[in-house]
Image (cartoon, rainbow, N blue to C red; front, side, top):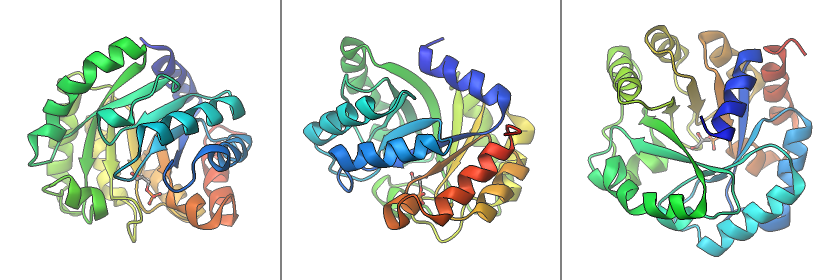
Length: 249
Ligand code: 1GP
């Protein structure tokens, strides 16, 4: 097992985990480093870099370097494609967009990126990425057949298939900036059938959102927009308080 996956496994044994998503195109370099340091001080476990389309390799590289200088937690790439890769990060979510109609995003781009990942020495974390309605921008650009919010059986099927294919995590994504997160009932249904960790992201803005998802069984929460819009304000503090509570601290 790679070092970052091992770190996550250890953290997950103690409670829930939080990933802070920072978009190098929106807050790059030292701004990203500042947000990352503040987020980690509040208990965030991983800094994820990525998010929008058109992130330049230089932007990703300089931001990863700045964030690495600022925090000791893993810096992980949430890739848009091979141009998102940099050896300055610790790992990359090696993710298949399970419900895309675009085969590039299911597997073909992975074949192009894999040799570079190997050369860079980046740890790939195999992950199934499933977009739930509304899906927002990733739903559109990813040419996704979004999973309807009430179709729990479809989400279960995809999540189980990801696990059976050997993926080490499953990410239920409502889309960045979604008006509401993935339904708690869907998180619960997916947790019932898979044993790999369930990551939930998209539209988590408040402590109440976080608590609902954690109670439903989400093991990793990802937030991006809340810090982009409010910095490390009330929403972020409340979300991290809910995550920390699962650890009994
Ligand atoms: C996006 O799930 C992440 O991929 C985060 O979403 O920006 O809505 O927090 P938000």
